[in-house]
Image (cartoon, rainbow, N blue to C red; front, side, top):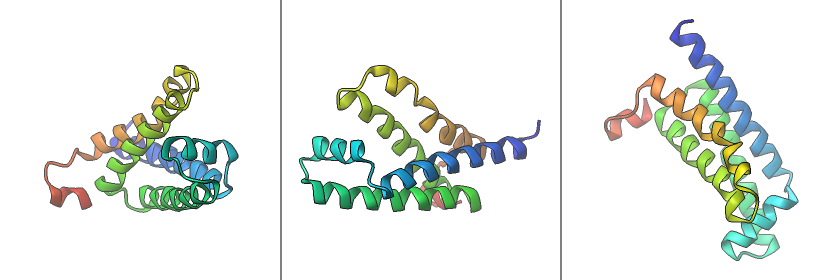
Length: 126
């Protein structure tokens, strides 16, 4: 299998993850609002507004990864995928909820590595 096909599979997988998460965030998933409140101390209104911003950013990342997966967006996807997986045990969910979500950061990391890890700031936008 050639590199281009593997990259397209990973682009679709990462975009799907961020499309799904972004949609849940825009729908105001109640459990996630509670997590935002627990982690930030925000009230319900502020947590809901933060979740909307997060949802919009997730949708933007999904689009960027599909159209032109720049390395900065992929680095963000790795970080955000890791963080959102890690949130689960931080808010009291079992550690296995974190382990189960390793692909949330592993797939964007694999795509980033296939495209070439950025060596300088200029390469972040390639």
